[in-house]
Image (cartoon, helix red, strand yellow):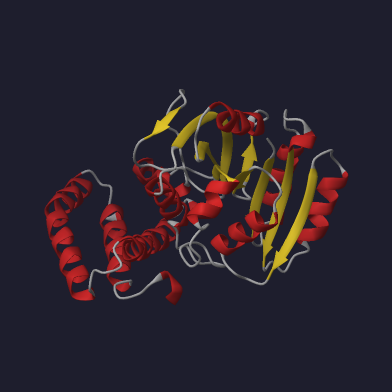
Length: 307
């Protein structure tokens, strides 16, 4: 069984170089895996960077160039040109542990799983704000403990560090284009929607902590302004995914459901705001809450194909 590592990238050459260096240092035999970098419309010379990393190590690495098509389109293209029995997906700003590749392959060799989520720990490269603690999942943290186990429900694997059998990827139809990053957009949920769909089709999912990566978080992603954008985009993303999962629900009923959900949350959110003010924490939680719901309502009537 062989592993194809697919890394979509857009305008992050320094982070990509570091990620590729960790893949060259894998404990897995080089003949057992390949790396396919999919350059999604970068202006920098990503093929030259990949060539340098390939020349300096034993692992086969190549670059596919696309016009700007979005994260999920890049993932699907990488899967289409890859050769491995198992397709693994990494973010370009991850640092991969030495045993990552071997652990990923072992999970598929030992268990009848369609997909695997590896552990994602955060490497925060700036001051950590007090309000971050309950929102680390917004940065793709995925840590379900020390023991490998089957995933019966959410959270499903995250796109920063996941893998799927080739035949199951094809059977599920790949990632849904439009439901994830496109250039500077922060729309997400492509990974969540894919793995939920894979599971509905009968595929079993597994968590493997030994397949661990560090997700590097730059200082500009630890600011209130970034998280306001991120909450708005998450609201948009959740509404778009709802459209895919419940396509026959008319707009009027969607608005009614959203209104009901929002009304149920107003009282507990108001209590949170009062507590924050009394403790001198300001209104940051209220601003994040409002930004998310603006995103939900802004996306009503839209589909991922509209983005």
